[in-house]
Length: 274
Image (cartoon, rainbow, N blue to C red):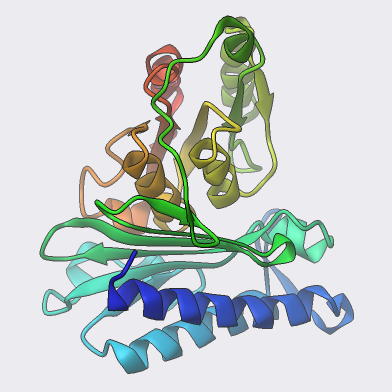
């Protein structure tokens, strides 16, 4: 984890975490708007994203930005600048509904998409409330607060398989009939599941081995690209989220898991919303 670019990004995201925490500790200063039904944005989201874009933009002027609150969220790939070296894909506060209700399960997620390599090469997920910072560079492992994490491709013993958990993302945009199908299938596997309304952090649960998989029928790139790269780095399996460059802007279905569990939960891909 020695690249200058990753080091710069870690520093910027760490500083952004302090900004987010100031808002989190003074919720009376939040200005909250409803973008669409039960999908909220606050001035904390906007301030954190603005800081990250300005800080990284001053260091890497040839890079572009795709953020949850940025102008690109309604863009098409034809509007992405082909002359850019890459794009920083940012979710300033993933888990906004948790954040505005003073629940500490939220994070800042940043991934770097390299235009020449056409893949994500850097990933950072920061949970300021618990002082956790995951950082990864493709081909160099995943680190939590500077300590390298073990791979997740080891086989489980019988007890570990029986107590396995998977994460689900079925927010308000998921129709009830699809949500029922998803949960019915998961329960048929005799595994536990969790829904905690923060995709990026739930992907880190796969990274650390707490979960064996994660599924969401439709998700945006800024919510998941960092976590997906980390899972791949540690030997996990993910669906081809970026099958098309358009998915950077339009999103896709998401499935990720350990090599042992991915085949078991793969039928969930049929319940996608894209």
